[in-house]
Image (cartoon, rainbow, N blue to C red; front, side, top):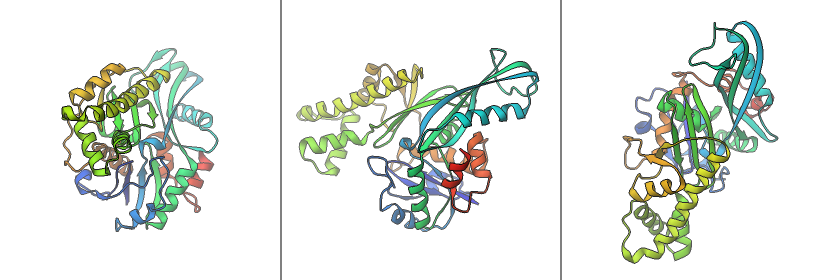
Length: 351
């Protein structure tokens, strides 16, 4: 059976396929990724320290995937079949991608029959014309190759990869809402749709940049900077910290503005979003409001030592086990045996 390897800027976690509570039962290690999103040289050592020799499906970190939205059309002239849907997705996949990137998952997020949006399945309904929006997620091939190599050196066999957006959708279920995911060095806005992920945008700023700015500006130790950044986010700084507050506030403003601007450019519209990765303190809520977004806490039940993003491992584990429907491209990737040369070579040939 296949285990789930959860990857983020802050943590690496491995979950066995028979885990009852993936968050609590995960075996943890430091992050495999540098501040710039590259696989560290020490990655294989961290994976080896997990003490397992499993086949794994990796849930990629936020900064490892880019979203691409594709539109395809087809003339039908009869009842829509499963083959029509599959063919449309294949056409979209043929248009997806960019030099040096692979499509790691893709799924239809909107289907129109003769100009009318269809809720639920379109199969069996008469139509003259089928229009479909397909959301695809791309990842750099060199990153996937480095990850596959590190996994092999650490005693694991990479059987497939999934985007964090897919894990989020599987964790929260089919609900139309927006979610802001804040990792250490990356922030991603994901807009969920009833049938999956409607789209996402990523900005290279995360919660760790607040502590880094404080460390560099005031010559603090890592521990002192982390503690001060936490106090700032919780709105617990004293009057003596006014200069430090100004530095942290500037970075928080940059994060919120960049994310909302990216969403506007990508035409991802939302009025309210769940906030995962930052506390929903008055200071944080106000910063997002000034950028044009209303945020609220998701109400997660996690151990205090767990990064909030680790909740995505629940959905990732379900996807890897096939307990919830998988996106078309990801289903192909996990169901078809990879080439002898590895998962990355298989991705190159198929997407």
